[in-house]
Image (cartoon, rainbow, N blue to C red):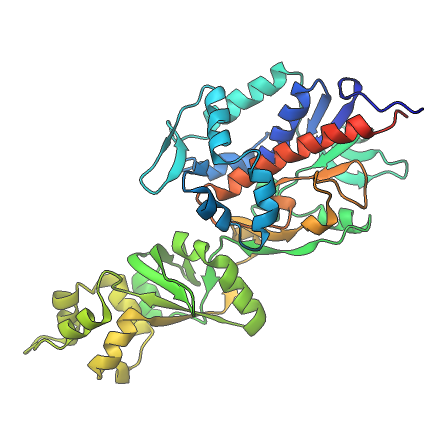
Length: 415
């Protein structure tokens, strides 16, 4: 009878040094597996570090049902991963590195010092102590005919043989940090059909701002505003006017449905509520107050507090006939249509949709086309808004892939 490989006598290769790859490395190393982790960049966790600039939002403390709802069409697949390693487990794990966390007023969870670098340093130190070999400036080029990995380093090309392989190569955004999507044709050549990468958590372009509006308001934050797509509940928050259109947290939260509407119809219209704290009746009543010799602009400012960039948007996105009819003007203030025509380029996006579909994977995150090859992190076909959801799922998928690799190694016959 052929004996299975025992994990403590096994060797695995992990390609990608972000949260997913590092988490899988930890799971495997703690089980006694020899782990070699390769990354094409000069240092590990570069996108993780950049995500922490301005405050390392690691996860979110909202209730489980709401948390899972952030993953949209892939909720069921992500739920299976997050049941084992969700927000609470992630916080406990971080505390084990000697890093305290706190919950902000919005429910977002941060390290106490708000920084990513101390967490990453502590983590890499622990991985090295557990015997994980970390290799930078090593780019994966695919497979040789004998199944070994083609790797290119500063000294040239070489081969790596492993009992199992994890691909944790990220999506296609922020290519300068290593997530360049170069793995797509390598998988396609082995018969793995992937969904095209698309921008997520991204800005969108408009047909064009007027010169007056662009000169005055590009770069301006639009605060205390609600945005809704047709037949969807409005979201409250803020966004920023850009030279090409709009971006910011409120836009990112709706980026998936906006993108899909553009894909289907060539454009998407969102509706801005410039005064979400007031009802339509209140807006109408305030507009109807006598204004005497005051201009309409001064009337809007004095009665409604509508000025600056929000007043500019009202001017930019309506016509003279609307301003001449206070009923129509009140309607525009509460539901101002803004047409978005294109997502910003992939490399400007915070994250990407598309990639390796869960249908191409076993429940252990192994490619059915390539036994012994696992995938995790953002290269899987899922998306989520900012707010800690992206990172949490990357950690969870890395852990799940690591556990899947251990199970595979237990089953795998000795060669």
